[in-house]
Length: 225
Image (tube, rainbow, N blue to C red; front, side, top):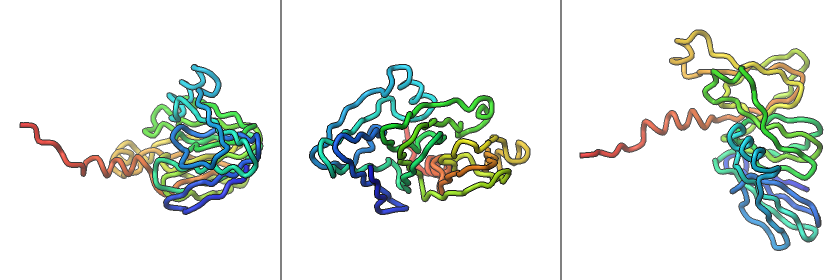
């Protein structure tokens, strides 16, 4: 699986080149185009319960598509629903990805949802996440551009929860409100997550929730007479 990111960071797409027999799992609706010689199969990837858990807790599609190359050099193009960046990341171990950011992964990686526990109960964005484990390549998307920050042991960073994309295993995190409740509701910030290294985090330069908060009040209102 060779991945080339095109047209970033505003309208990124991933061009994936596969060898014969190579398989890629992708979020439903992520396929932009593909060359001849690729077979596609749609399933829940692990059964009904796993599909429901990934959909309800992880914020991803109930179904996933599996693309298998029938010949060397087959091309698969993938793109997210929102305008933004795409990154291809080789991983060995475990990666935690915020809901909505998973686009695709190679064979050898297990994609499952995980529960953030009581730390997420007061977070508006929820910080529900997918757990991706194993060895292979993962393709992530964001709303806006993606920026990677490598944290040294004990080094901390504070990120708005709506701007988190992913972090590696070993990074500790804790969700909290900004200041007191007055600050939380009126500062425009809401909840943040404190992350502490060692490890890498990915953040996005735009927040889908912030965009919706701006957009919805400005939508035309129907006049019912």
